[in-house]
Image 1 (tube, rainbow, N blue to C red):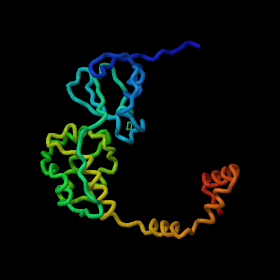
Image 2 (tube, rainbow, N blue to C red):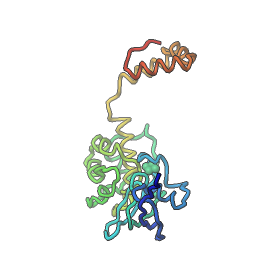
Image 3 (cartoon, protein in one colour):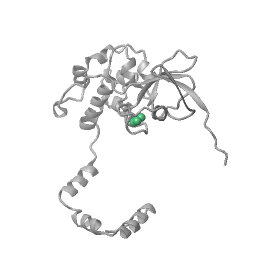
Image 4 (cartoon, protein in one colour):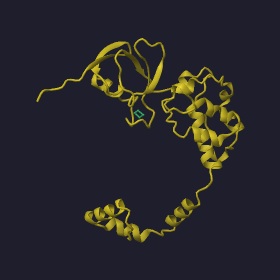
Length: 232
Ligand code: FES
């Protein structure tokens, strides 16, 4: 059978030219050219935010950012990875915190310096409305902000472009925690399930499950897949 060779493209990693197969992700391209990635890589699935990459494209003045595990290489791409974004996370005890704007501002006063340029939103690989979330916090609407930034993976690209030097992902983590602890309605069914578990209500079923054979497990799994009712 005739071997089909991939089309090669030229990328520039930290200024040096390399030939890599077209269409592979930036992470795969870096490994293809011989880098062993220890930092700047994690889940490889677009979830952990460890692989922030900044790049420029051929004949395009703009600076782009993306996740190296999700962004395919292009011919003429100049790129570098940012394995770590320097930023201090302020310390607090969530038990002593208050779910209001003043508490957030006391830890991160720089959010008040937001100039509304929207650079953070444009650079976000998760397509989060980052600037609008900051504005929601400034209006005191922490619930809205927490929901808006649910998909933030703390890659730090927003912070790198912010002229007001806001470290958005640390602020957003705080807001999500405040929302979870003080604002979101409590899940009553979850609380009662936890109580049941703490009172050993399922102990017998657990014992039976752990003593089952592999075959019994398979039968059980099939039933669950077919959404059939099961008794243990
Ligand atoms: S490696 Fe986790 S987001 Fe890219």
